[in-house]
Length: 231
Image (cartoon, rainbow, N blue to C red; front, side, top):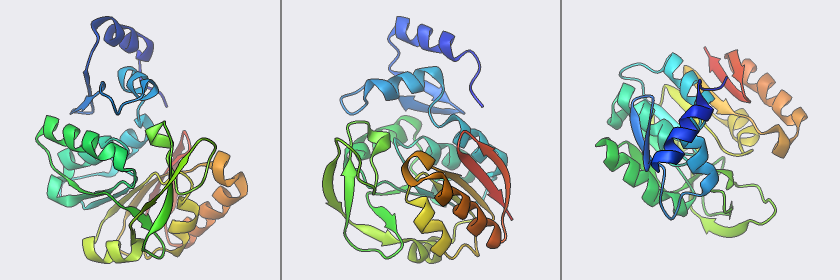
């Protein structure tokens, strides 16, 4: 699943020096000190979170409550807010570097979904987070050339109990294989989760698929390592 005319889009944005793009009805900054060139290129091409956006658009409807684990630069949270209403969206992002950019994108759209500058974990409390130069690759899992920082985390089950989401979006850069099997997903009717076999291994992704189906979900799509799971 790829956007159409992405090379032409990139060429046009590069020629015009575009500082913003529109993706699925929301506007996003493409230039700034905190936006690395690889993210700018993905945004210009329309590739940024393309599969996740399309899967979310298949299931989100007005009034749904959306919990997002791993907000990135705020794109998916804004797409959800446009459909479901900003008060019905709560996003978590543990990388403090991206928080000003998320807030700038919220302001650009005059949409203000909830955002917490924390991680989501199974147990809660302070955790070690590994921040990389490529802001969308930062993770709870250590990688080469990453910087270890301490961030606060909320317990996933506590957040689900508090917020009562009907849709769960998860891009946890590998932590999904630990989080989802332990979570109470009773209130949730749809999950969009990106898997990371290159980080966690293919066997762990296979086990995750089994856990999800055992919790009563059907995996109805698997696009570019992004699964759409429905009850």
